[in-house]
Image 1: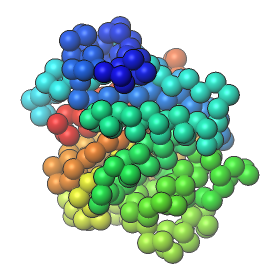
Image 2: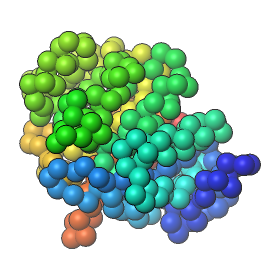
Image 3: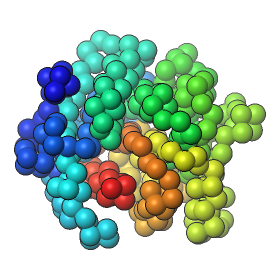
Length: 299
C-alpha cells in the first residue's frame, strides 16, 4: 500500500502494547496510533512533547486481555503504531497541516485513528479530518479547561484556544469536567450553546446514570473524543501542565466512556497533555490503559 511507504511503522519494541508484527503491520491493522510530540505553547508545567513516547513505553506493561469486555482487540483487529510526526520548526498552522494530512490519509485507508500528544493544540487537526469525513458528528471534550479563548498570550493557536478553533467549523461540542475558564469562555458557551457539564454540577449529582444519560443525549450519531488528561483529579493525574482540583476518577469515567461507545458510533479519538515525570511513571501507565480501554469499548 502506498500509505505504508509514506507513514513509517514502528517495530514491536517501540509500538503501542509491544504487539508482534503480524498484529501491528499497516495492512493487518484496523486501528492506527499516530504520535504527535508537539509542544509550543504550554503556559505552566511543560513536558508534553515527551508524552507520546512515555505512553507507548508504559503501554508495554498493559495486559493484552481486557477482563471487563473479555476481549483482546489488539489481536482481533490489529493496532499499527506510526512513527511520530517530526515537526522540526513547524508550528501553528503548518504543524496542524502535517497532522491533518496524516490523519486524513489514514482515514482514507480505512483506519480508526487515535492521535496522541503533545499539547491540546494538536486536536484541531484530527477533529477537522474526522468532521470532513463523517456527517452528524459531535465532539466529546474531556478537560478541566474549556479551551475556548479566541487567543491566549497573543496566540490563536495556543493549547488554551484549540476548542475555539474547532468552533469555527462546528459548535456540536459537548464538554465534560470543566472547572477552569475565563469570562470570555463562559460567555462563548452561552452564546454558541456549547453543551458544557461543569465539574461542580456533575459532583452535585454524584456522576450518576442520569448525568451520564444527559451527556449522551447531547451527542449526535457519530462521536469524536478529545481527551485532555487534566480532566482527571490531580491525585490521579499529577503529570500534566495545569492540574485543577475537583477532578474525576477512573471508575466513573469508564462508565461514561463505555456507555458512549454502546449508544453512539465512536469514529476516532485523541489523548493529550500528559507531561511525564521520570520519578513517577504511574500517570503514563494510566494514560496508556485509558487508550486501550476506549479501544476495547469501541470494538
